[in-house]
Length: 383
Figure 1 (cartoon, rainbow, N blue to C red):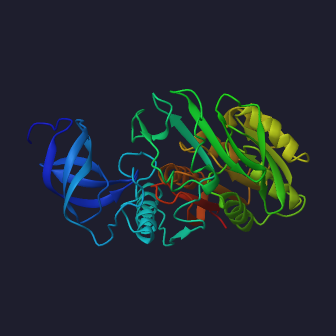
Figure 2: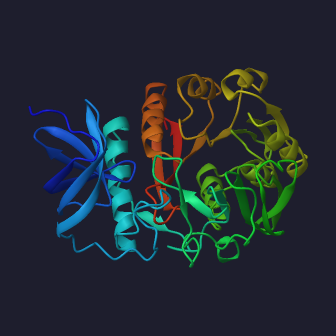
Figure 3: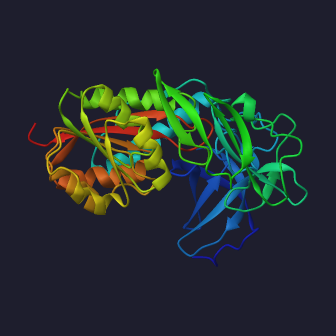
């Protein structure tokens, strides 16, 4: 094997292999693995090494010698420099196929589950969908976005951010002090621009006729249609019945808890963010909520549950939480996942604990990026 690559080495005429999780494509040069951004399978390109490692390196395309038929000219002037969009160089329809390949590969490899569905397009797409943005101000106060795997600020182009909802795509001319961050929110209650330190303020969101108070700096799904799409799929998968006991774990401000309560379920929720729990108690007054680590606080919940919603952070729920959930023998579990690798690991854990995956649906709630949202429905293996 040759000497390791060094940062800024340019490798000529590299053939690109399959897509990998994270918005990269796999290439092999002299037996070494490189994860390449801004490429497509089957292309022949020149690659500049951006990170050099012993096990693998990272790189980016600097010249294309043989282009994929799926390649297009990026519509954004800062595509390739901004770290927000992975796939602006890809025909939009093909980005969903790339995500399908990633979901299928990861769920098959990690959980032995054969994903045969498609990644569903959810309007608005592929632009104007993001209703929460965090802009960064550079050294002279210009708003921009961070470069990939960097704290360098790439100033916004004149057209603004293409994936942001139009009301927040162009920050104000004098947004704040250089070096700070600017939060932009297009909520049902109106458009807000403010510094991230103003965490006590709230906005109102609307989902299927239900109102939710959400902290301005707190978590809420970024895609305009995501809350409604995910709620519909969770309800369809769980089929809640009046009087059932339902657990909403990693519940946030009560998006799913409210829908379950409206269906007549007796809901218990757990969330680590204290402010989110305060708002959840307002949003869903009939439910009971606990604040804290889910794995630890589960012991305070009823020892039997009929249905469970899991909506964990990117790292997944993990064995301790899943073991505690399945010990309650719910008839169905809805697992909402923003990372298919974590989902695959957790589905395998659930299988080891006696629950099989009945279905997985995937949604393109982050167009132009590598991210994909999945909802899995689990049932006891005996059913």
